[in-house]
Structure formats: C-alpha cells, structure tokens
Length: 453
Ligand code: PLP
Image (cartoon, rainbow, N blue to C red):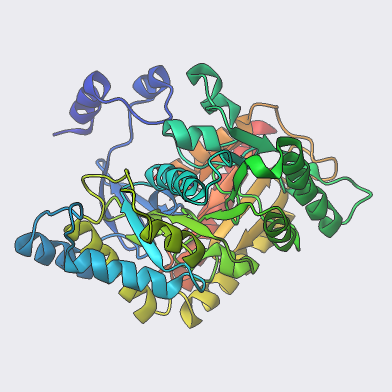
C-alpha cells in the first residue's frame, strides 16, 4: 500500500494515544515501516535516527535477531499459558529470578503485567493489600508529585501530577495527593538557595503533606528517580536521601517508579541505585523487554512479601497475560544481552560519558537555556533569552517547532513544552552519537531561523 492509502485508512479507523485527531488528520500520520539498530525508516524510504528509543524503551535497538529467536522458540514451544491457579512457566520463573538478582537487596518478589500503567495499578493494590494485612486499612493515601507521569489508566492518571490528564476525567481518584514544588532546580529553585537547600525544601513539602494527612493515613510516596515525561527533571543532590529518611520516619512505603529509569537508562540497573536509595516497592516496564513485547513488573521487598505470601486470603489481583511465556522469554534474553554487552557496566558508562559530553557542547547554542542529563537521558531547554530564560511563548510552541524540524532533518526528539528529550538506544555507538548531535544542531538552527527570523 502507498503512504497515502495507509494514511487514509488510519484516518478513518485508528484512534491514537495523546493526539489531537484533527491535527493528525490534516498532517497525515508518519508511517514507520522498519527499524534496525538506532535507525527507523518511514514508508517513503526516509532514514531517521531514533533519539528517543521509541518511547524510552528500545534499549537494544531495533531488529535484534536474538530477541526474535527467543520469541520464535518460546512461541513454538508454549504459545500461551497463565500463572493463575497454582501454575507457572519456566520463562516467567526465570525472569522473576533474573529481575530479583538486579533489584536492590530484598526486593525479591516479582509480579508481572503488560504495561507501566498496569504495573502502577498493581503496586497500588499490593500496597493497600499489605496495609490491610498489617491491620491498618486506613493507611491508603498515596502521595506523588506535581508534574509526575505514572501512566494513563484511571489509577496511573490519578497518580500522575499532570492536570490536563485529570480534570476532564474527574480524576484524581480520592486518596491521591500531589505535592510541589517539583524537584527541578532550574525552574523552581530560588536564587537565594543552593540546589541542595532546594532539594531539602522539596522533600520537606512531602513531610508536610504526610503530617497534614496524618501518617496513620498515608500508605506510600511514589516518585520517578528522574522525572521523565513531565519534563526530564533530575533530582537535586541529597533529595532522595531526605525523602527516604522521611518515609522511614513516618512508616510510609517508598515506591520507585522505574518505568523509564530501569534497565540501564541512568547507568545502573535501576535509577534508585544511581541516586542511592532503597525503595520498598518498584515498578518497571519499557526497557525490561526493550519494548519488543508488552511487559511490566512490580518488585516488592521482604517486608511486603512476607505479609502477602503468608496471608490466608487470596490476593485478588492479576491479569490474563501476567507472566506470558513468550513475553517473558524475550525479556530474559533482553536482560542477558544487556549484561553480555555490558550496557550496564563498562560499555554503558563509556557511552554515557561521551553522550553527556556532546550534550553539554550544545550549551553555547543561542536557543538553549540549559542542557542536563544522566546515563543516556538528556534534556534541552529552549529559550528566547539565555540570561533571563524567557520562553518564546507559555504554551511550548518552540518545542513543537523544534520537534518538527528534527523529524524533517532525520532525527526523532520528543518535546514537552519547550523541553526537548533525548533517550537513544543503549547500543548507540560514538559515531552514531556524533551523527545524532550533528542532526540536533541542524534542527536547532532551523528552529532558531523560524522563531527569530
Ligand atoms: N511510569 C512512568 C515513569 C512512565 O514514564 C510511563 C510511560 O511513559 C508509565 C509509568 C506508563 O507506562 P505505559 O505507557 O507502559 O502504561
């Protein structure tokens, strides 16, 4: 079929996530047909460097034959079976063991789902179930942060701190609370406080919220190690240690949403390891299978698992595809390959150093107010004025302009407001990083030309 034929069918039948559909119809969806390594091709034959690893997930790059083989073998042997009613499959069992080996000490029990949002729904129920088993059913409030993104199911959107996802749906659900300031010094820090002082102020806001709700009512605090889709915001130094201390002080479970940060993205297996804190519960997805199969997982520590595993009541939660054998087989091979290729370890570290160095070289560009990054995550702030940090407009038009120039120049960057994101596959080489930043610079120059003619 031609590009136009696919676009016409798509316009007639396909509803897209997070999309203004009349705009999509006017522009016509870009039809992506093939991927190899860090590159994608569209239906008109254009080659595009994927600076976003899909949606922050394709750790191993596209077309990894070993994952194709893992899926094929598993599907031939056992195309489906569930893990309900006292059954399991070797692939689900092996994957739970592999994940438990990588999580911080004690987070050894794993429950599977199909998406990051689902894993967050699961976490909420495990947390509530746990406190019920402890004889504290009133401990139900969950605190998260303004501008957090934790998914788009009813619970995931409630947990997220993004009002545009909530108002029209009558969300958040009761018991979900959001605190600010968001720990992002560039935007919310005061000129008379250091980054560390600012981080402590952000953590104090969490403590204040716990005290306002009453610690006896607060079940958990949830946060992404690095806040991703809300704007790629790196935690101030000392912030997570203080949050951990506060959670322990008031007996509030600490929940790390590792959906973006997990599986090598921040340099370690998990973001909480990069930032030096130990959660009670972790949720993960995306890089767990390099996006080749829909998969997510929740890991809980011994404190929670002892209560749950020894309970007399049935844990009334789970999905048809929890621990799907084909999906788990792909994830097992994915984690083995991340290890074998040292993407967490020597190679990952060297790639990250090179990537962050090249990212920082963009600082001299007239459009850029700040670059920031960790591991293989990068954020770029677009501003009209470098010194005052004034934006082009309050509604993020520079971001969209830049994103469009990127795509035309053969690179994918994502924009949220006027923040551009980079999150390339972990297998990217230094030559490909050079190419990536060459294309980023071209796109920035074109954006500048359009915005400041
Ligand atoms: N949590 C975080 C931190 C995310 O970034 C995302 C998605 O980007 C989710 C949860 C939701 O994951 P999914 O889109 O797989 O439901």
